[in-house]
Image (cartoon, rainbow, N blue to C red):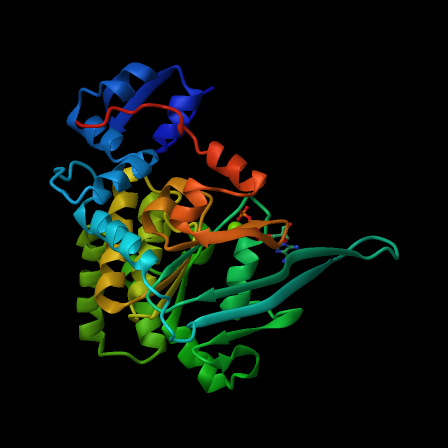
Length: 363
Ligand SMILES: Nc1ncnc2c1ncn2[C@@H]1O[C@H](COP(=O)(O)OP(=O)(O)OP(=O)(O)O)[C@@H](O)[C@H]1O
Ligand SMILES: [Mg+2]
């Protein structure tokens, strides 16, 4: 089997032999265990030390007040600080401010077209209630098909609810006028799972990122061009990429374009549906750091949908575990990781690729 991945945990679990590529060249190859425990090339060292499977260890570092571990990889001080901060906040009395997002008993039933008279229904989301406080990150995790993306689409007003209600900032979302819906679309931005499907192939990268600003009449063509440059820099893409088209980008570059586009209007809420799952750990760390920084500075609220529990541990304040359309377990990130109650959650945690593998810790 030839297995192409950026996920070192998977590589450790699945492959006997590992080949590491960097800028179009093979920089290191050999038995997986050897490379992952004793990387030689600087790039491999950075990759290995940034593997988020190390997340729990890194958080422990944050707990012992000294954060003088040199930031070797992608996951650096701001994230550790935030993790430490979260710990402190967990002890505080919950704020009395009403939740920014309030989903109550949401239900989505899809009717499937079938031959003959028999009707088939899929309960994609089934009596789900979630509150999200302003400035926090709530992760939705669960296996494929558990209803995560559907829940996101319901909140984003891309699919109508079958029943239940969704409030945003105290407003009932089912009764928005067109004008209010437009305002909502400016405040809440999605980054979707599949950038192939969501980026218009006819739009250059620059135009893709500038489009939301143009639609909402923000700025002048000149100021928009400047903002595009700033955004490209924020997501660590070279400015030259501005004139390329989505088909001329790598998967990870495309995903970063989607993130830049979502940030263009300076939204209050980002709904990130597997937004960093396709990125290698270094770029992933970069984006997660950017998101952490923005949250810190601007008080952004994140709905973070992922199957990657190692990443959840780093960024989320609260976690909801979904299964077959329902939330089967919820809690603060630390509660859930340290003490999962449901067997299903335990299995998800055990299934983190490379969870049992000892990576080289320090490059
Ligand atoms: N438009 C649709 N019509 C019919 N069924 C749908 C539709 N969209 C989703 N479903 C079904 O609803 C369920 C939940 O799908 P959803 O996309 O929310 O899963 P998910 O948790 O995001 O999975 P993944 O991790 O694979 O992205 C699945 O069983 C899926 O087949
Ligand atoms: Mg999905």
